[in-house]
Image 1 (cartoon, helix red, strand yellow):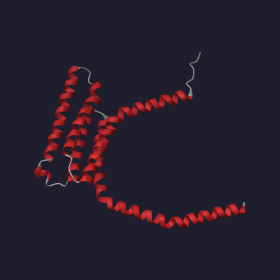
Image 2 (spheres, rainbow, N blue to C red):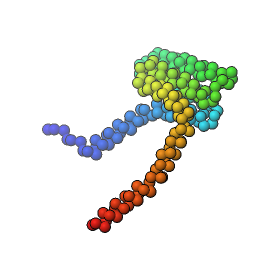
Image 3 (cartoon, rainbow, N blue to C red):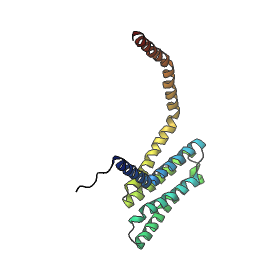
Image 4 (tube, helix red, strand yellow):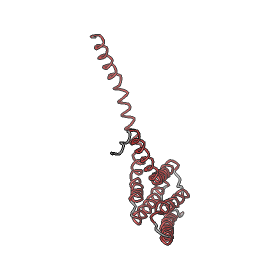
Length: 195
């Protein structure tokens, strides 16, 4: 006897359930990336550094690293070592961030630049934590944060150019649209007249 074939709806439900599980496993990494990018975007708009925000985000990254790697620690001593190494690792990142936020250092950088520096430190800490764990997801998160730094700097510098280019394209579209629409209308009218 052969096993009964699964129904098409059963396989679709199983695939959507697998997709939900995958998204749930990746959610901490996506949320961390969105929070980091949101912090830089807010700093660029408000023109003020969010010092407490970056410290809180570094602590959240430390907790995320411990939680996501908890199951890979086999016994109690491995879990204590995990907590200890991550505490030291993220404490070093926080010290580096606080050095950048000292008044003398902070006065040399505008607020958006300080936010990019803090994001760079957070990206470096995240990437190094991923290397320590040999975790592709954490390494990719650190790499994505690091690549966001030049992308955000470019967008900030090119924002006026992008807005002008968008307005130019929209202006050309508004200028050309009536002639394109009238050609389509006349060709449809000819086709209707021939039928």
